[in-house]
Length: 440
Image (cartoon, rainbow, N blue to C red):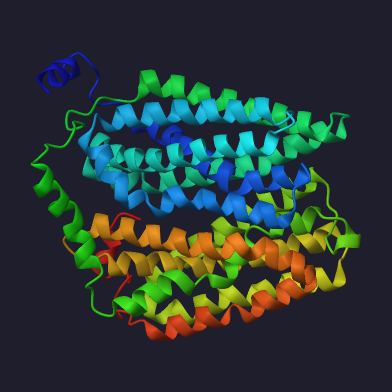
């Protein structure tokens, strides 16, 4: 410990936040989007079935499901800065490995293994980066840069789910076969990400407080670790809370792995038969921008009137726009403007309605152990995403796209039911309530 403290005296403990906060959260968003969204489009273009795509890519949620379990290890061993750099190196390596194994005969097994490495590294990076953010910035800068980090995280999503997919589509259109087009595109992202790693190696500060947590006896450490979990599951109304966290997005989680295959599949299979670049523009760019705008408006709405006022409106805006997929799968329109408008409407509604979910997690996390409670809530959220999504591809292939999207509308019913079960603090989220000072 003394060696670490002595070393820090020779290193910069503070840097301009603009030098590292934007790039750190770009690096946080890229691997998540690659593992959760871009992998779906990649495997669809490489000819995998919707059943396999949904099942195997949904398992990639697991690191975020169990993230609360190993987050204490990041605090106990080495520094947050060390974990950030290590996981960024692993993510960059896994991106390059995916690029080199796409053209091989056993591409599915090998690329999936590297996506697993990417997912675990990304989830660990989330833990370290969020902790480092609080250690590397004084309180007034933490508040000032919360919007900056969110903005650059979302820009990373657009640059990957939109930009990379468009790039791969351009290579496909210029005569490259599909595996080579995607291999080159992944290699480009790997080079960019490894450049971020090298940049952070020299630019990230060395906060004086970024030290391993003091360790107690193993028995005491286990008790301290389990105590917040016991408290969480003893909360008043815990069964209603768990039902809300698991089923509020029950319908939406079944769509998320099917949207891209639906846009790409030929019309003879009930899809819209769009080109890869068109999917990058419609779903990865226009859709994501609409999602972001919906989230921003949802946050402002709750800030003005509170969560209780908006929650029923938000559950409606989350679910009812799913009707656009019923229309698209029945009508199979060819007008790209119309398709853009439909996807934009659904994604805007999702962004607006999801705000209620985020604020609900913040509300139930109030108290002494709010950080751990919120981490547990996000783990349960990831579980609620993983399980329905795993079976969505099989359901779609059994039912066809048009019947599957009709089923999704039926699957919105649990979201309305669990909303009626939970109790919402009438003042939570309003601008005159203390939530205004919370980290968002």
